[in-house]
Image (cartoon, rainbow, N blue to C red; front, side, top):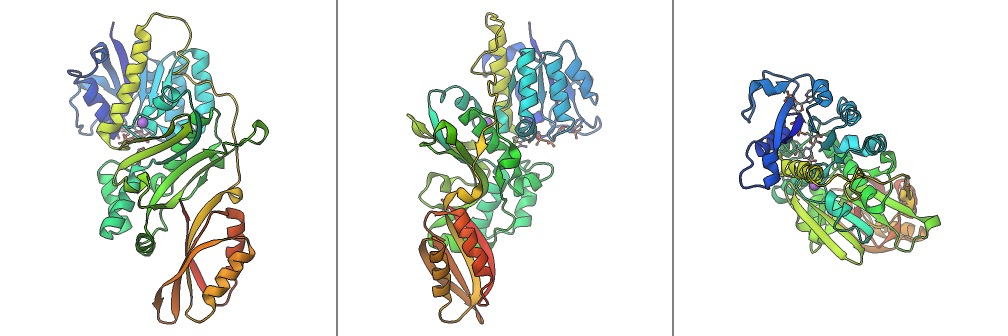
Length: 433
Ligand SMILES: NC(=O)C1=CN([C@@H]2O[C@H](COP(=O)(O)OP(=O)(O)OC[C@H]3O[C@@H](n4cnc5c(N)ncnc54)[C@H](OP(=O)(O)O)[C@@H]3O)[C@@H](O)[C@H]2O)C=CC1
Ligand SMILES: N[C@@H](CC=O)C(=O)O
Ligand code: NA
């Protein structure tokens, strides 16, 4: 008997998903056994890019998640509410859930997965991270034998698109953002993209899977790309770097169970041009995973947009369909369900060891570079290079790149430098990979 899908949302991703479900030929045969039963939207009068019988559409989403005929609820409305409540209600009514909603999962995984486990249903979220790139299921299944040390990725298509266009064309931030929205990459409110919050949601989800515990989103350090300007892109280029918004989660391989702190952060980063992540451009995402014994493995593809994201949504539906077609054991499949119970502890940012790039606007006079160098040295901040890059009248622009230093020490040095009379301002402080 056909499995009935209740689809919540017919926007960018909902439309892509409906298009695949309505056109199963040449895809996996299990797709023939799925039927689109109801579709929930906000407006019945909007024109749609997919042809559906009018009777399928409703604005009553509660009716879909409580419909006894629906087997799988696919949540693609986005946002926190009513998405969270609808997911919980669907679970309470015994529906399996597929969602692309990283905002809900990164905040409410605890209650959602606890409810799902109690009810014996699956909650699948491949589309929530990296859009069409398979990364959630690989972390749950194919990489299960590994001890993961680090996940590092470009997980937001909108900001990567913006940074790429700024880098390649010297384009203006606002103009490129508007184009990303038109192309369906950006969230309805692009603040989440631009300020790094979307990437923070995604790295929290990946870290949870990789390190086997829940992550408190409020503890994830998050810095967006609003302050990146053409000067930094150009100086970085001259120094051999490109600027990327990286999401990084790492665990010290030497950590003992008593001292097992994770570092999870999102921030613009200077990436050496030869690094594999440096060449990931436009809306593409890439996630580099390092583990023992696998070493490095990198996942690459389109992280946003209708088709790629719908590809991940439908693959989750197929996974559920496959399990539902298998002989019933009464237990949830252990490689598809969630078994995390505890919260991971995160290390404070001041303990992070990283390189920094910083740009200083100072008086153009003898001894300034020496003063900066001496101050950094007195805080145990070792400098890799310090160069005066430009002069504007009486002002000089000086760029400092450090070796790996403790972030807390670097910040203390900066506090002291800010008080120097010769220092006019410090427009940029960026971490370097
Ligand atoms: N766009 C992308 O590339 C990607 C998106 N995602 C995630 O997928 C999800 C969907 O995103 P996207 O398709 O871009 O979003 P859109 O804004 O394009 O679509 C949202 C859809 O949900 C409907 N909707 C929203 N709120 C309600 C409500 N309260 N009641 C009824 N219907 C509602 C809208 O109805 P109507 O059409 O009538 O307005 C619309 O059809 C989000 O969680 C997003 O983070 C994940 C990866 C990539
Ligand atoms: N807005 C997101 C869409 C996918 O999650 C992005 O730009 O990556
Ligand atoms: Na994915």
